[in-house]
Length: 392
Image (cartoon, rainbow, N blue to C red; front, side):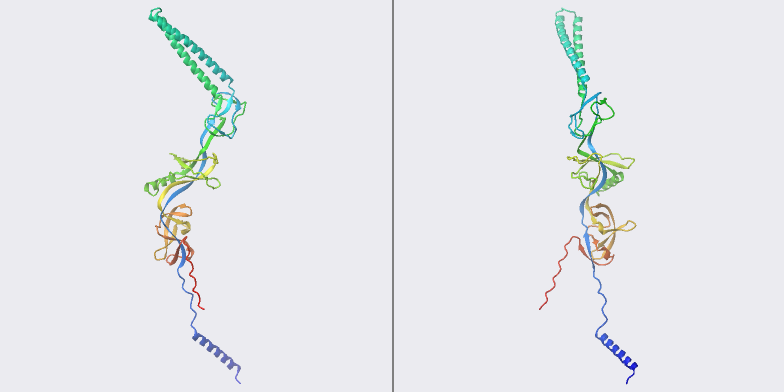
């Protein structure tokens, strides 16, 4: 009878034989297949005409402003307008007590009538004297006195007429009218208040609000860069580009504005200069003193290159670069220089040319020098090829 050790040895030998037989039937398992080119999404740069804009802060100011002040002394008898309402040019606003001015006007008219009567008498005497001196019925001296009296009467009439006109003007000043049309604010005086000619405090203020001005402030350094770009031919002037007004909540005002003028001096305290934009305001939605922002065109760049912002990377030192697929389908790293943001794209100043394919999706899967499979952004994906039908 065989021993226990010999039995175990025979079983181990059998296991080894079975393993050798299995090894002879099949080789070692293959490793993972080599990966193919990584799929990426690219944007091919094409030149286009771009209007560059700059967002500037500003304040709304009225188109015209007139402070209403009295030109004569008097007591306010009546207020003839509604506070906060709209007034027309020449519309009566206040009526002063004009009793004294009306009396002076009547007196001046009476003096004018008396002077005209005296002139009529002097004219008749001068004519009669001229006839008598011709026949030597009166002396020449008497005739000269009669002619001088006529001229003095004519001068008295002119002076009386001027006094009557002045009295009429002062009487008219007792009714204070609107110098311009627009919205009028609150009244600073009430009925019964004493006002004086050319006083410091205005009775009310009238503001024309349609159209209306928006005053913007731009850095003088930006103006210098703009002039250099225009002189170099990189930009074309965009003075006629409409100006978009952004309200305090960020929404766009429905009526575009137009650049009216730019100031000729720089504020020494802020280093900026004034830009004035005129904006239609038919609904009087914009009110003086309101804070707004304006998107104003600084220039038109012909043949500009715009790259999607997700395709431009920035390192800790602030340097920008982009991954580009070359003609061989291999990734290249390009240092680029960008300036303005135009929507969700950067304006390229240097480093990229028309026709370059910039990777905008799949950047985390690639590195310089590796082949990729590019797909144009926005292109429809190819339809899947249907599997062949199996034969029965």
